[in-house]
Length: 203
Image (cartoon, one colour):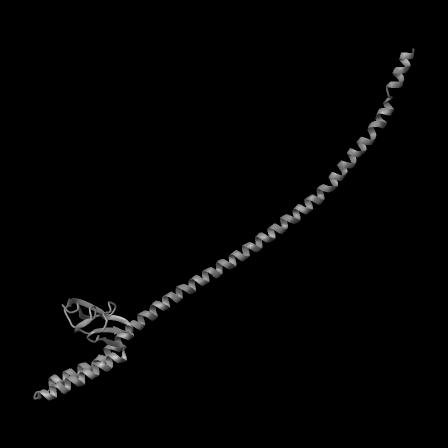
């Protein structure tokens, strides 16, 4: 009988088991309720973040469209500037040639007038040629066309002079010994270099 009593004391009743399990069940219920309450808040935060991202995306798309429009406008403007520049260069070249040609007309008139005179002395011919040459010099000066006429003994400049050959000369070696043909410069641009003989020094 003592063994039976011990068994009764050691085994808890069903009511005690329920009472022992009931606190854990309440904690689980509380956790479930807390989780259920947290889910709407998390969804609200997620919705707010999504809305903010969508607004940022929409703003970025608007800025991109504005930049694209500015780029297209700038590109069109650059194309217009390039076209106008080409037209201005073409007009400048055209009118520059026309201006130079117009300046040469009086020179041609003088030559034709000189040839039209039947009886002329040598002095008259020389005077007419000198007058025509002065006219041509004024035309060159007006259009910034200058001579390249180095002096004998001047240093040879490969940018302005073209050496035909070297000759023995009293001039310093490497200097201009003789000028065969004048050169010309138009606005600092060499049209034709002067043809010269370069001194090889004294033999």
